[in-house]
Image 1 (spheres, rainbow, N blue to C red):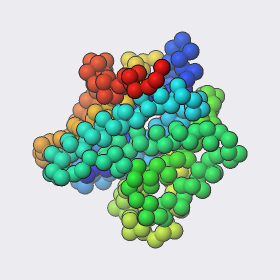
Image 2: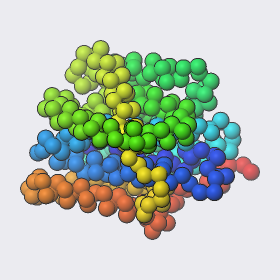
Image 3: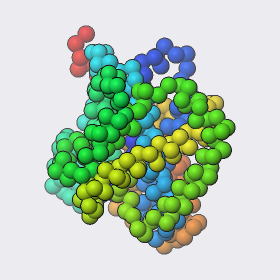
Image 4: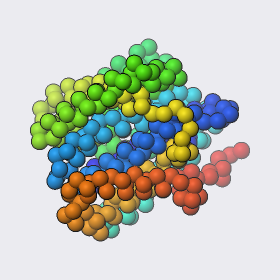
Length: 352
């Protein structure tokens, strides 16, 4: 199984209820989500190339260090209006729980073929491949009212997350290891305000963001032969990664700080005006959930077998193809075809 996918979109049910009253969507957030879903698809496209290129491996590690936290922080920000009322719970079920049921089942049957595991069971308690983000989003959002009451929400969330890194006995149910360890990023979201996002886009932040990214890439390049990128997935305990138990809490705190710095640098360069891709940012959940099928079948059909793909020109080509393809998956024609699965209608399931 390839590395876990990245939460590539904030589902419609995750959006703040105030957006229904707004005359138009905020282009900045849609631009951020579009750029992040491109990084998600590119990251998956790079994965088979990592063994043959230290440079690609470094870029892969850099991207995985911040694009998952970026999506989770944005998901938390857009969940700040969730109060557990029946109407909001219905939207949560429609926008998160039902797509999880559909795609968890679909990926199970699909990977039976691509992975050659014909007896892989359909289980809704162990998220498969990309679906972990939907399961975690459901849990995170249900806890939103609690984090509004806690006096020091992010430190408390870290207290919850840090011990998880040294607890291999947590099990696989709802991918609880990853859910807990990314919890602080989600908890941060509801406590952010629009002025915080405006602040990171100021020139005094935008200019230093470039050398910060350059320095992070240099660190990643040096770390490639020494550190496994599995630490960035947050899906395994320290012991499962062949490290002492005390490594887990230390690495979790370090990665939390680094990821927030890189998220700020990423957002600093997200345009705030409408662009040709802004409309696509409202549908990144389509690109997220659908591109995984292509990533799986590309390995099964041997798309990475040609040696020319492992040269610089081939690596650039793979990057561009992945970006174009995931962009197409967010386009209106694809959305019309797959709306029943990604944004299902569920009025029939609830009492009036």
